[in-house]
Length: 385
Image (cartoon, rainbow, N blue to C red; front, side, top):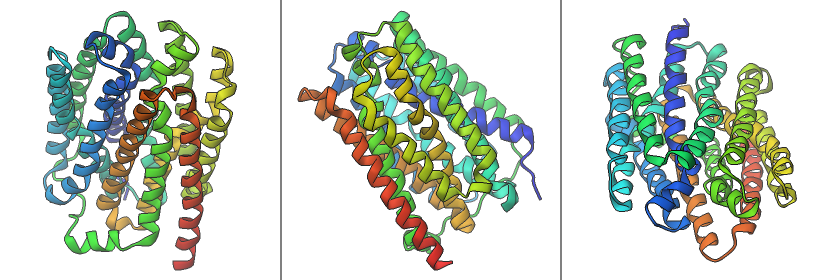
């Protein structure tokens, strides 16, 4: 029986938009953050790395300790926390204060995204599950269309504190929406230690999670530093930077919409492989983007694959083992943010050594490794069926 009403799906979509905006606004506003707080590019990138590490470590823990707690109350309080913490961030006078409050705020993505995916898995029939999950993940790709360009432009013109304040308001609205439409008493299956052993002992599941780590690592070597990269290499102004982010995000949204429509017909594993191939093409050709229009053209395949890949990975894991969805979704969320932490830390290290123009080669290698592992995971899953 399908209990995922349009109101519930819309609530989760908006929640993922707010979560995505909160994550992506830092790369978008990175230029103003480092200028206003008087820190280096690598230090500013630490905001991405530190928050990603916290999400990576805490998502599986929360999947275990939250138990049968009513997801309506849990997700509403989580989004309220996200809003209040970022409001406090906007008031911090120095980088250290911003860093610590931002890290604590990132508890919200560690809980909301995997628990929303697990709830969708419980509310939908198997035949509709892939489409429903990819639909609510349109929120992330919408955040890339609206959130990252808006953060880049507002950060450059009005300052990063205004961007953080906007996020605070959106998170509070999301909390209210969750409270109004999510059914009472909703609680996906608890991840017991036995279930965790099954999850961690499943080679197809763990190899699929590894694909997420490698893919996110490869992408965030460069994605985390788009703003300073384009400012240095193309001398972009705020309008041009916003345009780059907007086009990238628009194709991200398009890719996720296509994924939502066709994933149940294509199969999740094939869909993931297609996305990884598209991203590898952009990274291979990256150095040819010698002006803003060539850069936009080269970014299109990456945009089509980036968020669609994350959606397809969540659907792939849940379809591999529906009973273990809470754990596998939490592990995949951890994998996304572990990859972001590895990628942003690697990119910061390379930039500090004057290798800004070499970032894409490290990203390309990471995505190629992800594609190879994805193919192996699909073969193993077919053999074990």
